Image 1: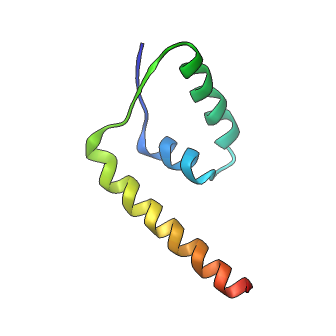
Image 2: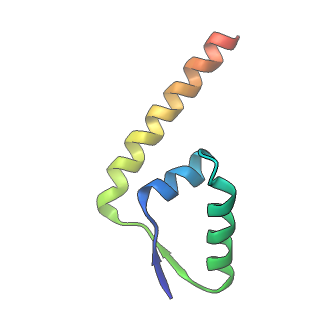
Length: 67
């Protein structure tokens, strides 16, 4: 079975954001256990990188404020 993951799902999993994280994580784990091939569209890679970099900056700024 082939499964294409949406960029928002991947971001939620990487950043552990949103209340749906636990359910998404369990779903991906079940897919992996079932032997599914998980795919990510190359055209969404730049979006993934951009949002991930924004989140890193946000966390760094938050750590500087809390220090």
